[in-house]
Length: 312
Image 1 (cartoon, rainbow, N blue to C red):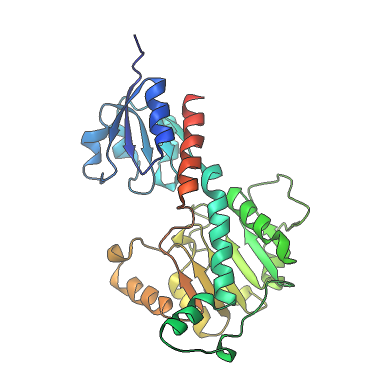
Image 2 (cartoon, rainbow, N blue to C red; image 1 turned 180 degrees about the vertical axis):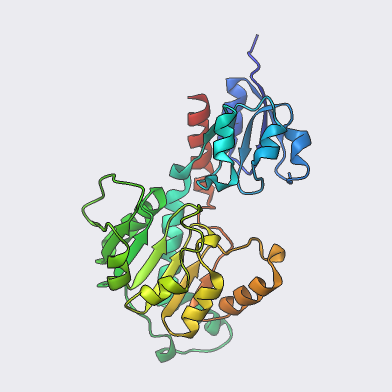
């Protein structure tokens, strides 16, 4: 007789590699991709495990609603959706899968950056509208530029690897890691060298107290050069109003954002929505709808990574 380990709530898009693997391990699945915070308590009550992305907040109340809960699997890297200290106090194991989508994020960050500095998207839209403007769309090159990567975990490393062939100077800063870095990057111990030397700044950090709106007016003022901002981490890392002011002052020459402070747009507060809409219309800003890590390959790799961590 096959062993039954209990119910697992699947509250996120996953690859069948994960669902098949969980069933093979002895779990029963409850599929609920359309779950909401309000409907979650009734669906999670008898579950021993749950797979989530960004739809649910596994806060104290929801963890308490699942007295049998043994583990939480996060598709992706952002563990701010889980009350980690409370989960630990209840003996609930928490797993993430940043290894699974870091390559996708690195490729997307590079794609946005190239599209911005070479004006690819903007000029293509002009051609669609019947315009043929060459001089107005003269671009810049990455070669010879200095980029500051803030946060050098899985995604920061993946992005740096993509940049290696562009003959750039790559400065990396990570206050929480002393792991060895590749020879093609230069580790800096403070942000001062990034403030002084970077032409481009890219964030690859989790959302926590010391990263919340760490890009603000003060950050812009400390930068010695005019610069481009890239953010594929979390929207609340960047103060959107400060970014707009930086662009209007000419201090920020462009921005590539895959995330914004509140998502999706239809749930955004009106004042913030107005700013985001204004930014999205600028020809030196690219905003994509949180799709950097959202590839077919990443879905499989995140699912396989979680399965390995959960069942071994």
